Length: 239
Image (cartoon, rainbow, N blue to C red; front, side, top):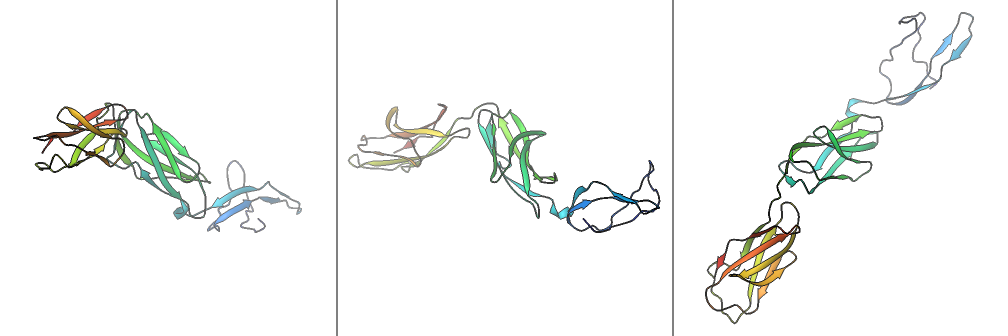
């Protein structure tokens, strides 16, 4: 700006030149110029150089919110990525998501999210790395995830009726199951009495009302399918 911050009377750097150390500069942006004056009082001013003075505690703050350590994904799935990032007195220029040493996604504006599509199998440490508009970068703590090569089948458990229940054949019987697909989503859950399918549910909560139960001992199961057609059968319930 227009404030004199120092004067050097004799050359003090190599090759022959003039150097000055500015102690305790004020925080914020500054335009620095050098003005040379000869013995006759003639002077010339250099072109300005813009700098920004900031403190160490003004580095960006970043936290990875997805994925979480311990999660497992399949190599054909998409890993959701998310982070929060702030900077005191500056603006966030971008957030990079990094697996190992590879940038797998970049977000330029909040919400800072991305997707890791078809990740390679293996163990990975994923971090979010935030950059402010001065180029200062800070990385979050890592989340450690496992990418499996082989797809995993769904898991399904019948939750109703209670094993050993005795119910009249003339009354509708409510069946219920809980199902999840580790590497995708559940497509449907079919309910069986022995080898006969008696009903199906396409959406959670997965349930079915058997309107006319067959008299006698019955073995009830639920069979869950994911969207890729992989399936699993629950442990039978005897009623």
